Image (cartoon, rainbow, N blue to C red; front, side, top):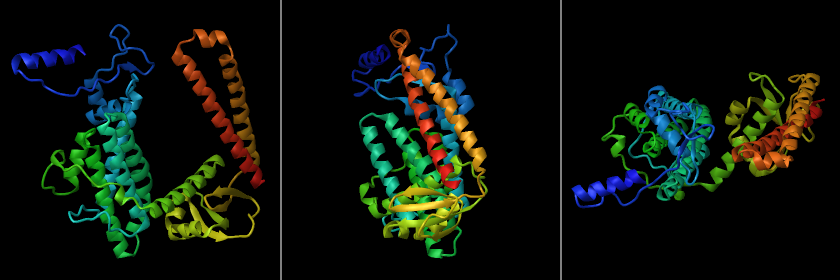
Length: 390
């Protein structure tokens, strides 16, 4: 406050006018344990040293993503390192687009693509743009940063890049050209939206990808909105993503070898979901490690059943899982967590601990109870699936 007040008074004294109309004062920056940074405690993080080690973009994004109103920032090098990895993820996505001939086209109209996956990612881009603008207008900088993180890493890098591979490598020239144009447009939008927070990597990629009439710094802020969202494409791709995530989750729980493929048997599905799986079979098989998709009236022996949107499918895992060893491993892990949970709950049941321990310690203990309960539920679900194979 005093720093801002001094600037205000100096400007009036020297120029005779106010220097600014709006001031955003963020919360106190503390260390990762919640303690105020102090030279005497030796817990000060020098921003110049952080920039040297992790890059200015990673430091900027970390502070922005944590700048929630009314809550102190707990800064740690692990968080900064994580956001540096985010920058690397964006760089790799841009390079993937470049390698696959995804060149920006000035006349590209995001309302024209026909492929469901392309309409879906364009809608996700529009949704992110609207959310970022709303957050910036309300000075919720952390919401803007976290929206971009979820969109760029979670939608573009984790899903769209992978979904695009069979289309970019396929024999349909028109579909390939459409996907190249869409991918180039999406990457450009990522750079535009992220530039205020991570200006250096975005400016570099902007100039590397193609010849531009002006720097990204002077680029036009996008104005497209929810009109680009296609509800039918959203629904179809969300079903595909949900199915792939469920298959991956079951494979991970059952510790199926990552390189092993398995079939997927459709036991019962409504027509809309069946059509979605048929249209996106190549993507599902590639990302879920499925070699064949077939139909059956009842689940085959040794299969794990998955309740999916619109019906039931199952994965024949007999022969891919050592049932006895897996059951023993899961039971041992669950029993260990149950014992730990009992100890933590006993601590919370002690009034002296709750009344006298620091508030952050009590909050962490309560959070640990929730985390342990979730882990136990996950292990119980995995044991149920093992029982289906036996």
